[in-house]
Image (tube, rainbow, N blue to C red):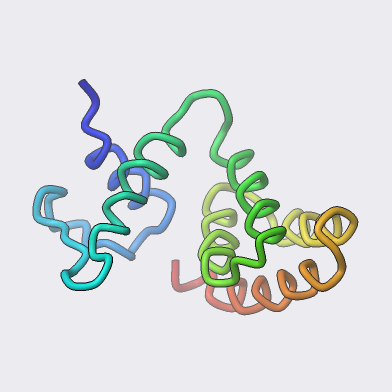
Length: 129
């Protein structure tokens, strides 16, 4: 049986290096307490453990799909993280610009313009990955 939490933490560490301490074993990783404290655990298990680990699409392709969805939703905080993840997954800045251009035709100019601003912030942090 697959341990989705361990799988998710491993994928998260690969796609977002430095965000979780490498020297801490998976079973010791916690995401805090208080209001909605289990939300990150749900994301780690369900999104990174189950979805990003599937064989059907390469991570690079999953980044393209994810960014398109996040741009359409206007999910700025998640979008910023996923522009950085997309770089880690092998997309170039030129390809990311094409995602923004393409989104303008389907999600609208305001959504694409917001995505451009978010991408500029994220790309300025690409050395922080």
